[in-house]
Amino acid sequence: DGDRRALDELVEGWLPLVYNIVGRALNGHADVDDVVQETMLRAVDNLGSLRDPDSFRSWLVAIAMRQIRDRARRRTPARLDESAASGAADFAELTVLRLQLEGQRREVAEAVRWLDDEDRQLLSLWWLEVAGELTRRELAAAVGISRQHAAVRVQRMKERLETSRGIVRALDGACPGLRELTTRWNGRPDSVWRKRLARHIRGCGYCGDTRESVVPPERLLVGIALVPVPVGFTLSLALGGKTAAAAGATVASVSWSAKVLSALTQPVVAATAGATIVAGGAYVVTQAPDAPPPRVAVSPTAASTHRPPPVADTPAVSPSPSTSPSATPTKTVRYGSVVDAVDRAPDPDTPPSALPHRPETGVTSTGGAHAVLNHRGDGVTLTGKGYVLVRWQISPQYRAGGLVMPSWTGLRGELFHVASGGGRRMDDPVSATDSTATGMGNSTVGYTVLPAGTQQMWQNEYFYLDGSVTLTVNERGADYGLSVFPSSWDAAEKDITTGPDQGVKRYGLVRDTGKDDTPVPQYVTRSTPADAATVAQESRVSAP
Image (cartoon, rainbow, N blue to C red; front, side, top):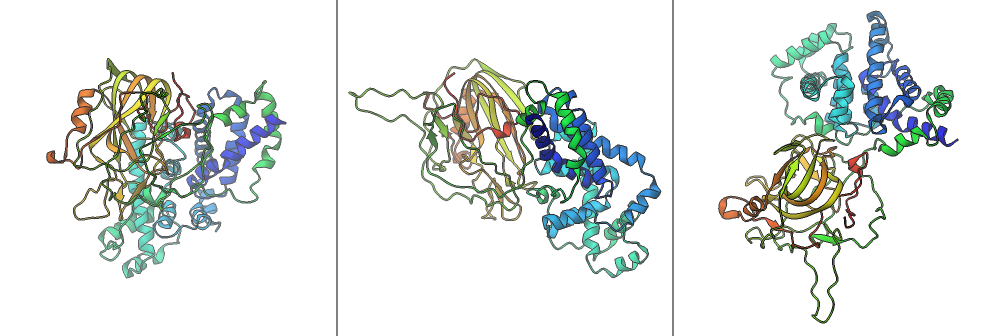
Protein backbone atom coordinates (compact mmCIF):
# COMPACT_ATOMS: atom_id res chain seq x y z
CA ASP A 1 0.00 0.00 0.00
CA GLY A 2 1.00 3.67 0.07
CA ASP A 3 2.49 3.53 3.58
CA ARG A 4 4.68 0.56 2.66
CA ARG A 5 5.84 2.28 -0.55
CA ALA A 6 6.67 5.47 1.33
CA LEU A 7 8.74 3.58 3.88
CA ASP A 8 10.50 1.57 1.18
CA GLU A 9 11.28 4.83 -0.61
CA LEU A 10 12.68 6.32 2.59
CA VAL A 11 14.94 3.31 3.15
CA GLU A 12 16.08 3.18 -0.46
CA GLY A 13 16.78 6.92 -0.62
CA TRP A 14 19.00 7.01 2.48
CA LEU A 15 20.76 3.67 2.00
CA PRO A 16 23.69 5.20 0.00
CA LEU A 17 24.43 7.68 2.79
CA VAL A 18 24.51 4.95 5.44
CA TYR A 19 26.53 2.65 3.17
CA ASN A 20 29.19 5.34 2.64
CA ILE A 21 29.44 6.21 6.34
CA VAL A 22 29.76 2.58 7.42
CA GLY A 23 31.91 1.52 4.48
CA ARG A 24 34.48 4.26 4.99
CA ALA A 25 34.49 3.94 8.80
CA LEU A 26 35.15 0.18 8.55
CA ASN A 27 37.25 0.51 5.37
CA GLY A 28 35.18 -2.03 3.48
CA HIS A 29 35.45 -4.74 6.12
CA ALA A 30 33.30 -7.82 5.63
CA ASP A 31 31.06 -6.56 8.43
CA VAL A 32 29.99 -3.50 6.40
CA ASP A 33 26.91 -5.18 4.98
CA ASP A 34 25.86 -6.44 8.42
CA VAL A 35 26.29 -3.02 10.05
CA VAL A 36 24.35 -1.31 7.25
CA GLN A 37 21.58 -3.89 7.66
CA GLU A 38 21.48 -3.38 11.43
CA THR A 39 21.39 0.40 11.05
CA MET A 40 18.48 0.40 8.62
CA LEU A 41 16.58 -2.23 10.61
CA ARG A 42 16.92 -0.20 13.81
CA ALA A 43 15.84 2.94 11.98
CA VAL A 44 12.72 1.22 10.65
CA ASP A 45 11.92 -0.39 14.01
CA ASN A 46 12.23 2.94 15.87
CA LEU A 47 10.81 5.32 13.28
CA GLY A 48 7.77 5.90 15.44
CA SER A 49 9.97 7.32 18.22
CA LEU A 50 11.24 10.12 15.98
CA ARG A 51 9.30 13.23 17.04
CA ASP A 52 10.70 15.71 14.53
CA PRO A 53 10.87 14.66 10.85
CA ASP A 54 13.41 17.44 10.23
CA SER A 55 15.91 15.61 12.44
CA PHE A 56 15.69 12.30 10.56
CA ARG A 57 19.11 12.55 8.90
CA SER A 58 20.90 13.39 12.18
CA TRP A 59 19.00 10.59 13.89
CA LEU A 60 19.89 8.05 11.17
CA VAL A 61 23.58 9.02 11.17
CA ALA A 62 23.71 8.70 14.97
CA ILE A 63 22.26 5.18 14.71
CA ALA A 64 24.90 4.27 12.11
CA MET A 65 27.73 5.53 14.34
CA ARG A 66 26.39 3.59 17.34
CA GLN A 67 26.29 0.41 15.26
CA ILE A 68 29.86 1.03 14.09
CA ARG A 69 31.08 1.45 17.67
CA ASP A 70 29.10 -1.58 18.85
CA ARG A 71 30.68 -3.66 16.10
CA ALA A 72 34.17 -2.50 17.14
CA ARG A 73 33.54 -3.57 20.74
CA ARG A 74 32.29 -7.00 19.63
CA ARG A 75 35.28 -7.73 17.40
CA THR A 76 38.39 -9.32 18.93
CA PRO A 77 41.89 -8.39 17.70
CA ALA A 78 42.42 -11.91 16.36
CA ARG A 79 39.25 -11.76 14.25
CA LEU A 80 40.22 -8.32 12.98
CA ASP A 81 43.64 -9.57 11.85
CA GLU A 82 42.05 -12.60 10.20
CA SER A 83 39.58 -10.41 8.33
CA ALA A 84 42.29 -7.96 7.25
CA ALA A 85 44.22 -10.81 5.67
CA SER A 86 41.24 -12.10 3.68
CA GLY A 87 42.27 -10.22 0.53
CA ALA A 88 38.85 -8.68 -0.07
CA ALA A 89 38.76 -5.23 -1.70
CA ASP A 90 38.70 -2.52 0.96
CA PHE A 91 36.54 0.62 0.77
CA ALA A 92 39.46 2.75 -0.41
CA GLU A 93 39.85 0.48 -3.42
CA LEU A 94 36.11 0.47 -4.06
CA THR A 95 36.07 4.28 -3.90
CA VAL A 96 38.90 4.56 -6.43
CA LEU A 97 37.45 1.99 -8.82
CA ARG A 98 33.76 2.86 -8.70
CA LEU A 99 34.28 6.63 -8.85
CA GLN A 100 37.29 6.36 -11.20
CA LEU A 101 39.44 8.62 -9.04
CA GLU A 102 42.86 9.72 -10.24
CA GLY A 103 45.78 11.81 -9.03
CA GLN A 104 45.50 13.43 -5.62
CA ARG A 105 41.85 12.40 -5.21
CA ARG A 106 42.96 8.78 -5.50
CA GLU A 107 45.75 9.54 -3.03
CA VAL A 108 43.26 10.84 -0.42
CA ALA A 109 41.02 7.79 -0.82
CA GLU A 110 43.95 5.41 -0.37
CA ALA A 111 45.36 7.38 2.58
CA VAL A 112 42.25 6.42 4.59
CA ARG A 113 43.75 2.93 4.99
CA TRP A 114 46.45 4.37 7.25
CA LEU A 115 44.07 5.98 9.75
CA ASP A 116 43.10 4.24 12.97
CA ASP A 117 39.49 3.23 13.65
CA GLU A 118 38.54 6.40 15.52
CA ASP A 119 39.93 8.68 12.82
CA ARG A 120 38.24 6.65 10.08
CA GLN A 121 34.91 6.96 11.84
CA LEU A 122 35.30 10.74 12.07
CA LEU A 123 36.55 10.97 8.48
CA SER A 124 33.52 9.03 7.24
CA LEU A 125 31.37 11.90 8.55
CA TRP A 126 33.71 14.76 7.60
CA TRP A 127 34.01 13.41 4.03
CA LEU A 128 30.24 13.74 3.69
CA GLU A 129 30.25 17.16 5.36
CA VAL A 130 32.71 18.44 2.75
CA ALA A 131 30.60 16.86 0.00
CA GLY A 132 27.56 18.73 1.30
CA GLU A 133 25.66 15.68 2.56
CA LEU A 134 25.99 16.49 6.29
CA THR A 135 26.24 19.63 8.38
CA ARG A 136 28.85 20.26 11.08
CA ARG A 137 26.02 20.18 13.63
CA GLU A 138 25.05 16.68 12.44
CA LEU A 139 28.68 15.54 12.50
CA ALA A 140 29.11 16.68 16.09
CA ALA A 141 25.82 15.12 17.18
CA ALA A 142 26.72 11.78 15.58
CA VAL A 143 30.06 11.68 17.43
CA GLY A 144 28.42 12.89 20.64
CA ILE A 145 30.55 16.01 21.15
CA SER A 146 30.13 19.79 20.89
CA ARG A 147 30.72 21.63 17.64
CA GLN A 148 33.79 23.30 19.16
CA HIS A 149 35.25 19.93 20.15
CA ALA A 150 34.33 18.57 16.74
CA ALA A 151 36.37 21.32 15.08
CA VAL A 152 39.42 20.31 17.13
CA ARG A 153 38.91 16.60 16.41
CA VAL A 154 38.48 17.22 12.68
CA GLN A 155 41.63 19.34 12.53
CA ARG A 156 43.70 16.63 14.24
CA MET A 157 42.25 13.96 11.97
CA LYS A 158 43.11 16.08 8.90
CA GLU A 159 46.71 16.37 10.11
CA ARG A 160 46.98 12.58 10.35
CA LEU A 161 45.29 12.27 6.95
CA GLU A 162 47.97 14.55 5.47
CA THR A 163 50.66 12.34 7.02
CA SER A 164 48.97 9.33 5.47
CA ARG A 165 48.82 11.04 2.08
CA GLY A 166 52.57 11.55 2.30
CA ILE A 167 53.01 7.83 2.95
CA VAL A 168 50.89 6.88 -0.07
CA ARG A 169 52.87 9.33 -2.21
CA ALA A 170 56.22 8.01 -0.97
CA LEU A 171 55.27 4.36 -1.48
CA ASP A 172 54.45 5.18 -5.10
CA GLY A 173 57.94 6.66 -5.48
CA ALA A 174 61.33 5.07 -5.97
CA CYS A 175 63.25 5.98 -2.81
CA PRO A 176 65.99 3.33 -2.22
CA GLY A 177 65.96 3.97 1.53
CA LEU A 178 62.21 3.48 1.75
CA ARG A 179 62.43 0.31 -0.32
CA GLU A 180 64.98 -1.09 2.11
CA LEU A 181 62.90 -0.04 5.12
CA THR A 182 59.78 -1.81 3.84
CA THR A 183 61.41 -5.18 3.05
CA ARG A 184 60.01 -6.53 6.34
CA TRP A 185 56.58 -4.93 5.91
CA ASN A 186 53.68 -7.28 5.14
CA GLY A 187 51.89 -4.63 3.03
CA ARG A 188 49.02 -4.07 5.49
CA PRO A 189 48.74 -0.50 6.85
CA ASP A 190 48.83 -0.17 10.63
CA SER A 191 49.75 2.46 13.22
CA VAL A 192 53.25 1.07 13.85
CA TRP A 193 54.26 1.25 10.20
CA ARG A 194 52.55 4.61 9.80
CA LYS A 195 54.87 6.05 12.44
CA ARG A 196 57.94 4.36 10.94
CA LEU A 197 57.22 5.54 7.41
CA ALA A 198 56.28 9.04 8.53
CA ARG A 199 59.56 9.30 10.45
CA HIS A 200 61.49 8.22 7.35
CA ILE A 201 59.67 10.73 5.13
CA ARG A 202 60.37 13.61 7.51
CA GLY A 203 64.10 12.92 7.35
CA CYS A 204 64.38 11.90 3.70
CA GLY A 205 65.25 14.48 1.06
CA TYR A 206 63.93 12.21 -1.70
CA CYS A 207 60.52 11.41 -0.17
CA GLY A 208 60.06 14.91 1.23
CA ASP A 209 60.74 16.61 -2.11
CA THR A 210 57.17 17.24 -3.28
CA ARG A 211 57.40 19.05 -6.60
CA GLU A 212 53.66 18.86 -7.22
CA SER A 213 51.52 21.36 -5.32
CA VAL A 214 49.58 19.45 -2.66
CA VAL A 215 45.89 20.33 -2.81
CA PRO A 216 43.99 20.42 0.52
CA PRO A 217 41.68 17.41 0.91
CA GLU A 218 38.61 19.69 1.31
CA ARG A 219 39.00 20.82 -2.29
CA LEU A 220 39.70 17.33 -3.57
CA LEU A 221 36.55 15.91 -1.99
CA VAL A 222 34.24 18.54 -3.50
CA GLY A 223 32.19 16.92 -6.22
CA ILE A 224 33.06 13.32 -5.33
CA ALA A 225 29.80 11.42 -5.44
CA LEU A 226 28.64 8.83 -2.93
CA VAL A 227 30.10 5.40 -3.64
CA PRO A 228 27.22 3.41 -5.19
CA VAL A 229 25.68 0.61 -3.17
CA PRO A 230 26.98 -2.64 -4.72
CA VAL A 231 24.72 -4.59 -7.02
CA GLY A 232 23.15 -7.51 -5.20
CA PHE A 233 23.04 -5.83 -1.81
CA THR A 234 20.30 -7.74 0.02
CA LEU A 235 18.82 -4.99 2.18
CA SER A 236 15.40 -5.15 0.50
CA LEU A 237 15.11 -8.86 1.33
CA ALA A 238 16.08 -8.31 4.94
CA LEU A 239 13.60 -5.49 5.35
CA GLY A 240 10.76 -7.12 3.48
CA GLY A 241 8.71 -7.92 6.55
CA LYS A 242 10.02 -5.09 8.69
CA THR A 243 8.82 -2.30 6.44
CA ALA A 244 5.33 -3.65 6.31
CA ALA A 245 5.23 -4.09 10.07
CA ALA A 246 6.67 -0.66 10.74
CA ALA A 247 4.32 0.95 8.29
CA GLY A 248 1.37 -0.53 10.12
CA ALA A 249 2.73 0.29 13.56
CA THR A 250 3.83 3.89 13.07
CA VAL A 251 1.27 5.28 10.67
CA ALA A 252 -2.15 6.67 11.46
CA SER A 253 -4.14 8.57 8.83
CA VAL A 254 -0.99 9.99 7.25
CA SER A 255 2.19 7.96 6.72
CA TRP A 256 4.91 9.03 9.16
CA SER A 257 7.56 8.01 6.66
CA ALA A 258 5.88 10.21 4.08
CA LYS A 259 6.15 13.10 6.55
CA VAL A 260 9.86 12.41 6.86
CA LEU A 261 10.21 12.26 3.09
CA SER A 262 8.45 15.58 2.67
CA ALA A 263 10.71 17.24 5.24
CA LEU A 264 14.00 16.10 3.71
CA THR A 265 16.02 16.60 0.58
CA GLN A 266 17.59 13.33 -0.55
CA PRO A 267 21.37 13.13 -0.89
CA VAL A 268 22.34 14.56 -4.26
CA VAL A 269 24.77 12.96 -6.71
CA ALA A 270 27.34 15.53 -7.80
CA ALA A 271 26.93 17.27 -11.17
CA THR A 272 28.84 20.07 -12.84
CA ALA A 273 27.81 23.63 -12.09
CA GLY A 274 28.37 26.54 -14.45
CA ALA A 275 27.69 30.24 -14.75
CA THR A 276 25.75 32.20 -17.33
CA ILE A 277 25.92 35.97 -17.77
CA VAL A 278 22.73 37.77 -18.75
CA ALA A 279 22.02 41.45 -19.12
CA GLY A 280 20.28 43.61 -16.55
CA GLY A 281 20.31 43.96 -12.79
CA ALA A 282 16.78 42.85 -11.92
CA TYR A 283 13.86 41.02 -13.45
CA VAL A 284 10.12 41.37 -13.06
CA VAL A 285 8.06 38.47 -11.75
CA THR A 286 5.03 38.03 -13.98
CA GLN A 287 3.87 34.60 -12.79
CA ALA A 288 1.28 34.18 -10.08
CA PRO A 289 3.04 34.48 -6.70
CA ASP A 290 1.82 31.10 -5.49
CA ALA A 291 3.02 29.18 -8.56
CA PRO A 292 6.38 27.60 -7.66
CA PRO A 293 9.09 27.75 -10.32
CA PRO A 294 10.59 24.54 -11.71
CA ARG A 295 13.52 23.43 -9.57
CA VAL A 296 16.82 22.27 -11.00
CA ALA A 297 19.16 20.48 -8.63
CA VAL A 298 22.76 21.53 -9.18
CA SER A 299 25.61 20.22 -7.06
CA PRO A 300 29.08 21.74 -7.17
CA THR A 301 32.26 20.11 -8.43
CA ALA A 302 35.84 21.20 -8.32
CA ALA A 303 35.88 21.18 -12.12
CA SER A 304 33.21 23.83 -12.45
CA THR A 305 33.78 26.63 -14.90
CA HIS A 306 34.50 30.06 -13.48
CA ARG A 307 33.40 33.56 -14.19
CA PRO A 308 36.50 35.43 -15.48
CA PRO A 309 37.58 38.84 -14.17
CA PRO A 310 35.17 41.49 -15.44
CA VAL A 311 36.29 43.71 -18.30
CA ALA A 312 33.18 45.76 -18.94
CA ASP A 313 32.90 49.19 -17.38
CA THR A 314 29.33 49.84 -18.44
CA PRO A 315 27.58 51.56 -15.53
CA ALA A 316 24.81 49.58 -13.91
CA VAL A 317 21.42 51.21 -13.76
CA SER A 318 19.39 50.97 -10.59
CA PRO A 319 15.87 49.63 -11.17
CA SER A 320 13.32 52.37 -11.62
CA PRO A 321 9.68 52.50 -12.68
CA SER A 322 9.06 53.29 -16.32
CA THR A 323 7.82 56.81 -17.05
CA SER A 324 4.52 57.50 -18.78
CA PRO A 325 2.90 60.56 -20.34
CA SER A 326 1.03 62.63 -17.77
CA ALA A 327 -2.30 61.77 -19.37
CA THR A 328 -1.74 58.04 -18.83
CA PRO A 329 -2.38 56.64 -15.34
CA THR A 330 0.80 55.29 -13.70
CA LYS A 331 0.67 51.57 -12.97
CA THR A 332 1.36 50.73 -9.33
CA VAL A 333 4.32 48.39 -8.93
CA ARG A 334 3.61 45.63 -6.43
CA TYR A 335 6.18 44.81 -3.74
CA GLY A 336 8.20 41.78 -4.75
CA SER A 337 7.58 42.18 -8.48
CA VAL A 338 11.21 43.27 -9.03
CA VAL A 339 13.86 40.72 -8.06
CA ASP A 340 17.65 40.89 -8.20
CA ALA A 341 19.28 39.43 -11.32
CA VAL A 342 22.71 39.23 -12.92
CA ASP A 343 24.13 42.71 -13.60
CA ARG A 344 27.25 44.34 -14.97
CA ALA A 345 29.85 46.03 -12.81
CA PRO A 346 29.41 49.82 -12.75
CA ASP A 347 32.20 52.24 -13.62
CA PRO A 348 34.48 52.03 -10.56
CA ASP A 349 35.18 55.78 -10.58
CA THR A 350 31.55 56.95 -10.78
CA PRO A 351 29.98 57.89 -7.42
CA PRO A 352 26.60 56.28 -6.71
CA SER A 353 23.25 58.04 -6.83
CA ALA A 354 21.69 59.23 -3.57
CA LEU A 355 20.57 56.47 -1.21
CA PRO A 356 16.93 57.03 -0.16
CA HIS A 357 16.57 57.26 3.61
CA ARG A 358 13.86 54.87 4.77
CA PRO A 359 12.38 55.01 8.29
CA GLU A 360 14.51 53.12 10.81
CA THR A 361 13.82 52.24 14.42
CA GLY A 362 16.47 49.53 14.65
CA VAL A 363 16.91 45.83 13.91
CA THR A 364 17.57 43.13 16.50
CA SER A 365 19.47 39.95 15.69
CA THR A 366 19.44 36.55 17.39
CA GLY A 367 23.17 36.53 16.67
CA GLY A 368 23.84 39.81 18.45
CA ALA A 369 25.66 42.80 17.03
CA HIS A 370 27.94 40.61 14.90
CA ALA A 371 26.72 37.17 13.85
CA VAL A 372 29.26 34.93 12.08
CA LEU A 373 27.77 32.17 9.92
CA ASN A 374 30.47 29.74 8.78
CA HIS A 375 28.85 26.33 8.44
CA ARG A 376 25.93 24.85 6.57
CA GLY A 377 22.80 25.32 8.65
CA ASP A 378 24.08 28.36 10.56
CA GLY A 379 21.39 31.03 10.65
CA VAL A 380 20.28 34.27 12.24
CA THR A 381 16.80 35.78 12.65
CA LEU A 382 16.45 39.54 12.17
CA THR A 383 13.50 41.58 13.44
CA GLY A 384 12.62 45.26 13.28
CA LYS A 385 12.66 48.23 10.92
CA GLY A 386 16.02 49.32 9.57
CA TYR A 387 19.17 48.40 7.70
CA VAL A 388 21.13 45.14 7.72
CA LEU A 389 24.69 44.58 6.49
CA VAL A 390 25.74 41.16 5.15
CA ARG A 391 29.49 40.88 4.58
CA TRP A 392 30.82 38.06 2.37
CA GLN A 393 33.93 35.95 2.96
CA ILE A 394 34.72 33.62 0.05
CA SER A 395 37.59 31.14 0.53
CA PRO A 396 38.48 29.27 -2.67
CA GLN A 397 41.90 28.50 -1.19
CA TYR A 398 40.13 26.11 1.17
CA ARG A 399 37.46 24.78 -1.18
CA ALA A 400 36.58 26.06 -4.64
CA GLY A 401 33.75 24.91 -6.91
CA GLY A 402 30.04 25.58 -7.05
CA LEU A 403 28.58 27.83 -4.34
CA VAL A 404 25.16 27.08 -2.86
CA MET A 405 23.68 30.47 -2.01
CA PRO A 406 22.36 31.45 1.43
CA SER A 407 18.62 31.96 1.63
CA TRP A 408 16.08 34.15 3.43
CA THR A 409 13.12 32.26 4.91
CA GLY A 410 10.03 32.97 6.98
CA LEU A 411 9.76 36.57 5.74
CA ARG A 412 7.08 38.61 7.50
CA GLY A 413 6.75 42.14 6.18
CA GLU A 414 9.14 43.44 3.53
CA LEU A 415 12.82 42.95 2.67
CA PHE A 416 14.62 45.07 0.06
CA HIS A 417 18.13 44.92 -1.41
CA VAL A 418 19.07 48.59 -1.20
CA ALA A 419 22.83 48.94 -1.86
CA SER A 420 26.15 47.19 -2.47
CA GLY A 421 29.50 48.34 -1.11
CA GLY A 422 32.66 47.31 0.66
CA GLY A 423 34.83 48.88 -2.03
CA ARG A 424 34.67 45.95 -4.44
CA ARG A 425 32.62 43.33 -6.18
CA MET A 426 33.84 39.87 -5.29
CA ASP A 427 34.75 39.19 -8.93
CA ASP A 428 37.04 42.24 -9.12
CA PRO A 429 40.75 41.58 -9.76
CA VAL A 430 42.77 41.41 -6.54
CA SER A 431 46.39 41.02 -7.64
CA ALA A 432 48.82 43.19 -9.58
CA THR A 433 50.98 40.16 -10.43
CA ASP A 434 48.37 37.45 -11.14
CA SER A 435 45.95 38.43 -13.88
CA THR A 436 43.78 35.38 -13.15
CA ALA A 437 43.15 36.30 -9.51
CA THR A 438 39.81 37.74 -8.36
CA GLY A 439 37.93 37.59 -5.09
CA MET A 440 36.35 34.39 -6.45
CA GLY A 441 39.67 32.53 -6.87
CA ASN A 442 42.53 32.11 -9.32
CA SER A 443 43.86 29.61 -11.83
CA THR A 444 45.95 27.85 -9.18
CA VAL A 445 43.39 27.14 -6.44
CA GLY A 446 40.32 27.22 -8.70
CA TYR A 447 37.27 29.46 -8.67
CA THR A 448 34.10 29.79 -6.67
CA VAL A 449 31.21 29.53 -9.13
CA LEU A 450 27.76 31.04 -8.63
CA PRO A 451 24.62 29.22 -9.79
CA ALA A 452 23.52 30.31 -13.26
CA GLY A 453 21.39 33.45 -13.01
CA THR A 454 22.65 34.47 -9.57
CA GLN A 455 23.60 38.11 -9.06
CA GLN A 456 27.29 38.69 -8.35
CA MET A 457 27.77 39.66 -4.71
CA TRP A 458 29.85 42.59 -3.47
CA GLN A 459 31.99 42.54 -0.33
CA ASN A 460 29.19 44.30 1.59
CA GLU A 461 25.50 43.98 0.75
CA TYR A 462 22.92 46.23 2.40
CA PHE A 463 19.28 45.31 2.96
CA TYR A 464 16.29 47.13 4.43
CA LEU A 465 13.93 45.12 6.62
CA ASP A 466 10.49 46.05 7.86
CA GLY A 467 9.35 42.92 9.69
CA SER A 468 11.32 39.74 10.38
CA VAL A 469 13.27 37.15 8.38
CA THR A 470 15.83 34.37 8.90
CA LEU A 471 19.07 34.22 6.90
CA THR A 472 20.66 30.75 6.61
CA VAL A 473 24.00 29.63 5.17
CA ASN A 474 23.57 26.60 2.88
CA GLU A 475 27.27 25.89 2.43
CA ARG A 476 28.06 22.75 0.49
CA GLY A 477 30.70 22.71 -2.18
CA ALA A 478 32.55 26.04 -2.22
CA ASP A 479 33.72 27.40 1.13
CA TYR A 480 32.21 30.69 2.26
CA GLY A 481 30.98 32.53 5.32
CA LEU A 482 28.81 35.53 6.19
CA SER A 483 29.02 38.21 8.85
CA VAL A 484 25.64 39.78 9.62
CA PHE A 485 25.27 43.15 11.38
CA PRO A 486 22.28 45.34 12.22
CA SER A 487 23.32 48.57 10.50
CA SER A 488 22.03 52.07 9.67
CA TRP A 489 21.46 54.41 6.75
CA ASP A 490 24.44 56.50 7.86
CA ALA A 491 26.79 53.49 7.79
CA ALA A 492 25.52 52.33 4.39
CA GLU A 493 25.79 55.81 2.88
CA LYS A 494 29.34 56.26 4.17
CA ASP A 495 30.38 52.87 2.80
CA ILE A 496 29.04 53.28 -0.74
CA THR A 497 30.37 56.84 -1.13
CA THR A 498 33.94 55.75 -0.34
CA GLY A 499 35.79 55.73 -3.67
CA PRO A 500 39.09 54.74 -5.29
CA ASP A 501 40.72 57.96 -4.12
CA GLN A 502 40.46 56.49 -0.60
CA GLY A 503 42.16 53.22 -1.48
CA VAL A 504 39.25 50.97 -2.48
CA LYS A 505 38.60 49.33 -5.84
CA ARG A 506 35.32 51.09 -6.63
CA TYR A 507 32.45 53.20 -5.37
CA GLY A 508 29.36 51.38 -4.15
CA LEU A 509 26.06 50.94 -5.96
CA VAL A 510 22.60 52.18 -4.93
CA ARG A 511 19.74 49.83 -5.79
CA ASP A 512 17.01 51.49 -3.71
CA THR A 513 14.47 53.66 -5.55
CA GLY A 514 12.64 54.55 -2.34
CA LYS A 515 9.56 52.71 -3.64
CA ASP A 516 8.20 49.19 -3.91
CA ASP A 517 10.02 48.64 -7.20
CA THR A 518 13.28 48.40 -5.24
CA PRO A 519 14.48 44.85 -5.87
CA VAL A 520 14.05 42.08 -3.34
CA PRO A 521 17.01 39.70 -2.96
CA GLN A 522 17.11 36.38 -4.73
CA TYR A 523 16.44 33.25 -2.66
CA VAL A 524 13.73 34.77 -0.43
CA THR A 525 10.51 33.06 0.65
CA ARG A 526 7.75 33.59 3.18
CA SER A 527 7.66 29.87 3.87
CA THR A 528 9.94 27.96 6.26
CA PRO A 529 11.12 24.86 4.38
CA ALA A 530 12.84 22.03 6.23
CA ASP A 531 15.90 22.52 4.02
CA ALA A 532 16.68 26.20 3.44
CA ALA A 533 18.79 25.24 0.41
CA THR A 534 15.60 24.40 -1.51
CA VAL A 535 14.48 28.05 -1.68
CA ALA A 536 14.10 29.07 -5.32
CA GLN A 537 16.43 31.62 -6.87
CA GLU A 538 13.51 33.60 -8.28
CA SER A 539 11.97 35.00 -5.12
CA ARG A 540 8.19 35.11 -4.91
CA VAL A 541 6.95 37.27 -2.07
CA SER A 542 3.44 38.62 -2.38
CA ALA A 543 2.48 41.80 -0.55
CA PRO A 544 2.36 41.18 3.23
